[in-house]
Image (tube, rainbow, N blue to C red; front, side):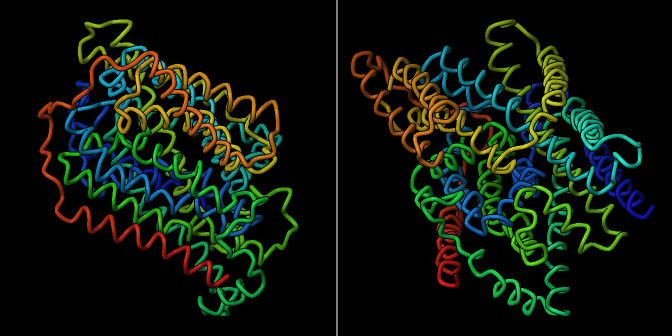
Length: 526
């Protein structure tokens, strides 16, 4: 009973708070609906970025991977600072100067309309085939484990997961459909606090239990039990070799944290450049700290369970929750997990609807669409995508290397080719639209073959690096024969104040130093 009461109480509070903050919000214009009226504060931007990124696929999938592989997988998190620093200092000032609502819009300005449409379509496809289904499925695993849905209704576990997927998908879509980006961002702020508190409770209570009241003693016992789990330097044959930090992983982080619509849309909704830069750099601080929540519990789980769950690694986090949390807190934490699922699901749905409405519908279907018409199209798109994600989600089970690894493998199919296109657009002025299109097609074919057809014996993140390099070479070759006819210059759309935050560069340098220090410290301790 206490579990259910605490779950309903926190979930209801978040919904009420989001409604109260939005009761006077103008949601009838495209800026109001898709960008929160360009009024987001730094803390809201950072909270929403973090919650958009972190969901149950991290809490379950990444802790499961840490349980099995150790802390080498934190590289997925801490190296995000690379993309956030680049975004804060270089890219976001340009986005805001152009007054962008979507990142694909830039590609039309830099290349042509065909490039914009192609990339927009690939982005929407990546949302509905990878991120949305996995987020719903991992959330369903957690709730089935915590509330025993299948036992309560007398059905199979798979049927219980289906029920949770449908309920979560419906509730999540309502936030995005009726509240737009502002509803998503506001709810993220509250859920972010809940995730911080609830997420820290798991390792803290576990270490206190292991250390007989002392966190330090508990950590010492966990470390001595399996010191190899604390290594951050992955071997060449590990799940994440250390060398990948300098190949495909760097490209992935740059694209995702400074060019990916679901993340950068929060910065595009900032009230000014200072706010946007603060939001991105604060997110960088969070990303350095977040492994304590999404990796350390998995390593502690190895202390408790040994290797007995290696073939069921994605169950380790739900088991940790039940083992260390008091009954009256399980419901609260389930609400936090629900908030994390809803945040990512809402954000992706909102971004997909934004891209379809502005980059496809407004460009190709109804060029004269009014502001209110675009908002209605955005809501209908959100509904359709939500239904599709709900139908696909239950088929995400039985990933051989875990759900998080599956998601990263699938993301490479979209992130690296799209990252190559955006990086070429911003940094290589001689690349032409023809060169981009040929390279994009070649990159997609190459990754499809090397991932799903022929095993070339190279880690998939290294394959990302090879694909990126090959695409850039192809772009240069094709652009030599089909050159750029005129160079693009950014013009100020006078949408927001573009004065920079005076501490942006010092803060970025400090974050970079701390990121490197994490590796130096953990390398030495292991």
